[in-house]
Length: 250
Image (cartoon, rainbow, N blue to C red):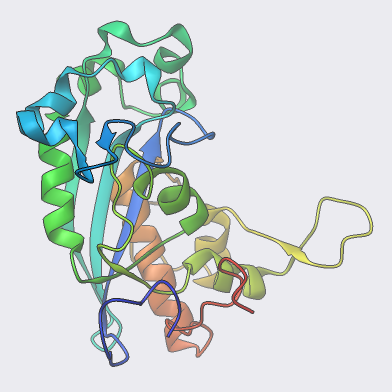
């Protein structure tokens, strides 16, 4: 059993898998790996003493890049179905945001606005709802090192150990698309972008209904990644329990 499955006991090959996607204010990720408000003696965050609402009073300009849009689908590999499970624009007090945060790529290149985030579902509520959905479930993303390592495993989400990981969908797509590395002399393949992998591997079929355009919104991208997983699994090219390439698993 890999480190990502420890603590959940024996398991069978999962059929139903959650596929999650995030849209964020930047590529660097959240600033803190651990909760900076954690009391080292009581092993409890001081934020907990005030209830969830304390999160919503933080100055979010101090904590690095933020998740502003989150979407979750549930895939049944046996039934070859995709079901929308959750979608939310994550709400923060944007009045203290820096200009860099306000002009993030996500706001300049999609229909998501800073105003929508300011009026979105409060972060504390989204975290509580997402935690309940993913708790004890099998989950993956298209690029786990981004969505999970840079964001959901770090403060303020701190979801590591709450769910079990399946193989990164992007890892399997890389082996199929076989895009040459952009660096001279490198023999390994580079990771394909989600829209390229979807179009290439599904050979023009469009079960996610994006009509050739990735809108870079979380639920839509989660649907695209979900259908990509199903196609690769149907073709025998996606092993959900293969963690090779994930933090040294070879």
